[in-house]
Length: 323
Ligand code: F6P
Image (cartoon, rainbow, N blue to C red; front, side, top):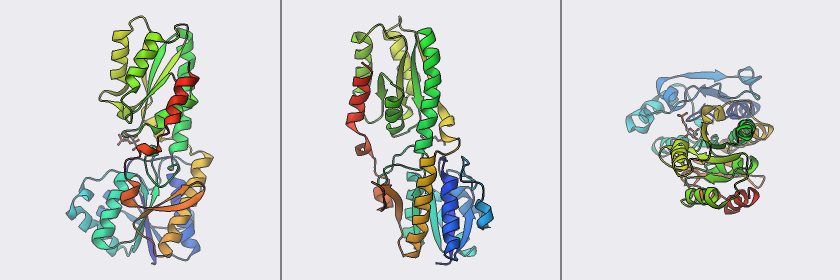
């Protein structure tokens, strides 16, 4: 390979810039060219390519977002869209790719590899942590720290007013953000898409649990149910009108901000590993870290639903520690 294309796609995540930097610097170290592709698959189709050098990635390791910008592309989901993308890749002499993103990104990468034989290595870039083949994804650590900082503030006002707050966090298909931040912020109950017993558990707790609590936090993953935290709020308000209940949706603040040390290091390690892997002839895999070891997982495996990543003990932990 001579020219590696790098791009970010899907929802952005803090640490993506550190990953881009690692890919560019490792490629240059090996005297390979690097081409930045802007706006993910959209830019790949539309010809948004730019050569990258050492300076293109200076002073970005600490920055949130992605300097290459990101997008969710409908066109790339069609065979015609992918044909256009391939044509542009050839035109710009890009002969291998590093794709940074989540399951949508890897589904696209797998198709491009299968249909046109382009070697692609993926890097896990999503705040959701919902990929198989890595203990943590780039952006997850920063996002959960953003969440607990916000919930600590909510806790102050909850305590002043003797209120129950239902806090909604991101995670369209996954409760991993909700569960970990629920433990860390002393939540009463965590409601996650992976469980159907959590709402009855919340109602039971409110009915039979301690009545002398001055503040209560309930964490809800946005994918838990249609209507998310507002729906839970309505149910709680109807059944327990005596409890002063408020709903707070944290939203996209979870996707921004300076990446934590953990995310910067993870991004740097897997970014480096991706270029080494392409050089060694690997393709169609995501580079992750499991138990401290770089691990490669085929794209279709990496995208499998990850309910096994949910630790049942963590659910129990929330319950016991908030008695
Ligand atoms: O996949 C990451 C994520 O932040 C999800 O948790 C969330 O459901 C989704 O992206 C939001 O996407 P968008 O920014 O396109 O609304």
